[in-house]
Image (cartoon, helix red, strand yellow):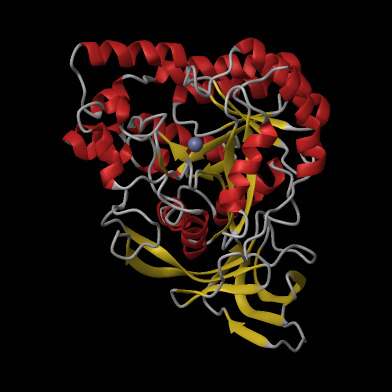
Length: 460
Ligand SMILES: [Zn+2]
């Protein structure tokens, strides 16, 4: 099976030219101008952009939470991702405190394996670091191909590890060639503020926001980068939202630390004024919460300064009846919002089209950098001979409206209802197969593969 994509404007993190891409099987075999090859299928990409499939390294599909599950399964979530130009996701396995990492991985794989339409991998969240867990780290990196370990500095009693565990984990992960991801917010401060607001009868979604002020994130980010600097362990801060936290990273980079930053599309585009809409604000209840306009400016600048390497989603959808669990108490609203399908088009429209970032930067932050940081480059994250043929063909001029009526995510509201975006995903190839074409998904459940990753110390 061979495919020729002809006359597209080919964009990678470094290149921008009109040319052809020839695919044999799952792999790109040649890129150039006027390729003299015969293919079983030819796709005319004249007038279109052609760039690497998006990688969203922060999603939560079918995630158990408060007796329910995030509403996208591995099937519906990865399919919606493909519709939006994202060919691979990295989800999170969450260790149960008192049990092994392997136990959690087996549990997650019982939901994910043979159910994904798009490619996937996992970060392993270590919520209980002890002598037994320590022994599992090397196995995960060298045998399972899971090289990134998520930590929580919040959610005490469920997910949070203390600084003693953090230092121990950092030393082990560094030794084995991995990377630590962190949810960097000060859990004790937040728990105090949540309890205080509840005691005062302040129970609307606005108080979710007011219980997690910027300082809770800035303080934890600073502490994390200091601990990472001390141990020499590479770090990656997930869903960074604000100026104070980014300043901590700026200090780390002055010390030449390997410290990477992800923000999410919502923190670039939405702000905390949405929490003033009474209970409707629950649609955007997530942690950390949406911030201020000044933080959006900081994050866009951070992308261009190279301090923010990745734009992800933290996609964690809950249907409206699930959000209603917190109708009378913001602390019971399931955290998360749907965006897996919208990220690529929103960032193109609001970032590239509006002149905030270049096309090359767009490819970097939606695909290439995640592939490099998480040990998949150059198999994923670029268009080059030998790379997987994960390719988006994109019409940069087509305007359309984002809506629950047209999206493919399994959730009954859109966080971006009514947004007009310029630019539309037209065709998506995943490992050489046309997965999306003409608003139809042609890849089946089970086509998505688990991607084993390489030691990140080889890449960063
Ligand atoms: Zn998350």
